[in-house]
Image 1 (tube, one colour):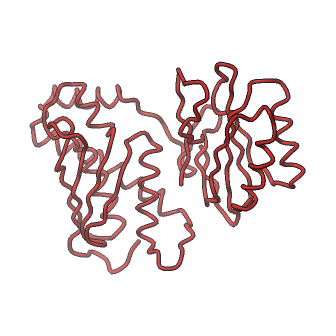
Image 2 (cartoon, rainbow, N blue to C red):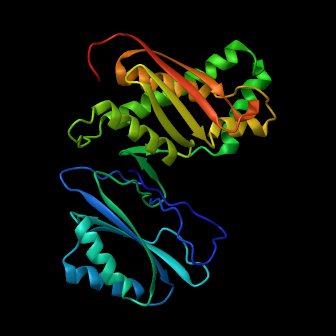
Image 3 (cartoon, helix red, strand yellow):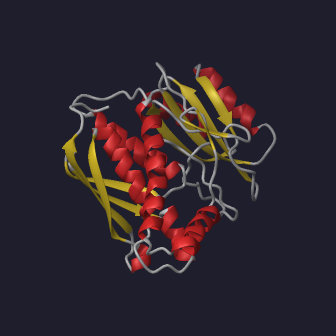
Length: 289
């Protein structure tokens, strides 16, 4: 699981955000777990929390205050090394005894977490940049003005942009030394990581449905960055060409086979969700890369 912190300008008092923490990918022989606390914004709160963890002998890897305190409340996230679920439960019980702690969320041990480091972002140890929805909209707008969205050349160019993104996503994810459980194929781990990384980048919330293993998939995406940007331009058509390219190239690199992605549902075509069908055809290699 990859966690990122969702910033909310106006947050209802007492509501824990869907936490998602901040950018470095921590991997290696250790397992990491995280705990997020909603606390009263008072002096000495963090010191009391760290004292509780010190008494338990917790190995703390990172402490973060991911959002500016609002309405007398603040959030503190703590990344811990080698603290299993039993350890997490014990820490939770002790922290709930503090009158300054208003809420707790636990995240069980994982092999990695995503963190924002100062003013830069690194995705799986690679320097990254942020594209806003308005930037994507401007890119699409320029292509439309030069060729029109219905133009085959425009659509192919947008899809090739997606191919480049898809290849980079695969190369990043393939470097992860995922701990694969018994009976869990490596490609399923890669697809789960694709889903998490895709959402962490702000591209949209992805569901991957395996129709036929290693051959056919249905991909459903909510809040697709590309389709939302095209909707702002009042395009009434299937608009996920960059997304098609991302899916085609990622699946092609994962399986070493020719892959075709088709958009079957689109919010700009009157549907409630964006949906893509991915078909994996003849093999170009006999192994998963």
